[in-house]
Amino acid sequence: MKLHQLRYLVSVAECGTITEAARRLFVSQPSITASIHDLEREMNITIFNRTSKGVTVTDDGQTFLGYARQVIEQADLLEERYKSNATPAPRFAVSCQHYSFAVNAFVDVIRTFDASHYDFTIREEQTHEIIEDVARMKSELGVIYLSDRNREVISKMLRAEELEFEPLFTAAPHVFVCSSHPLANRASVTFDDLDDYPYLSYEQGDFNSFYFSEEPASTLDRRKNIRVRDRATLFNLLIGLNGYTVCSGVISHELNGENIIALPLEADEYMQIGTITRKGTTLSRYGKAYLEALRSHVPGGTIEAVRNA
Image (tube, rainbow, N blue to C red; front, side):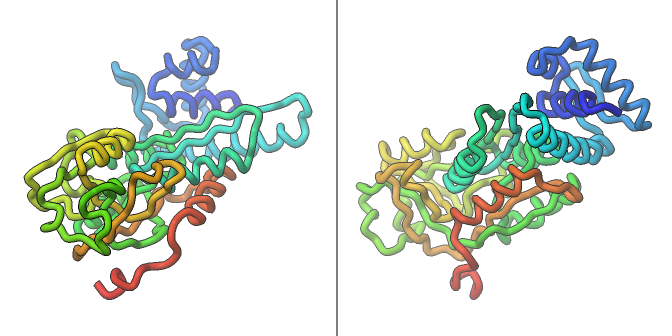
């Protein structure tokens, strides 16, 4: 087993195809294919299933990839310390639901390490994609939320993929509205108050059920519904149409501007937001730094309304 074989392996897992990994690494496709075959034979393991559309990681391969990433991380640390001419590019990826605090934490990690070059990725995605990314080791961590309504289904998926959920904080539902919204001066709002306004939510593709929704109370019937894929579009529609979306209430004016505000929502639900990681894996230094940064950007503790729910 050689270090370059592990690097090929990780790159193929991240790219999903050997062709794309070869392009990224500036190595011929046959060289990567032969290298991975040699490694599989040596370790007596099947790491990838080959298909016409690319490769998928086997269950055994998922575990092997976790160890491979740790070996590469340690090798990079050694080279940084002892090889003066070595400048390996740090690599880190995270997948999350559409939370501004998750982006703020990502910014903090980049600023903390302040490398001259790096290859970092943050993916704001559909819920099932986040789970798949972490399970397939495309991302080191994921950020999602659980509630009484989705916990059973999502937890079952996490167990099946050998993933662990670690809570960050628990919040009562809020709504994001624009600062000029007719209800903006209210101390709190109800769904009856919001009935005349467009409800904005994140589209979940083939998994468009309330179990995978990013928004609490997604089972309620609403007369005006708009689904979007990205946060910028959602906020533009909030402002342009006096719409609203249900959220945790944690907002970043630095990223989202002063035109978006959060109002408490009178509802009998809660959001437990946390991270997902693969069982048995040790976070890289970037993963650990990201987790600490997340904690610095979210409220501490559980709010009283949730404790008494």
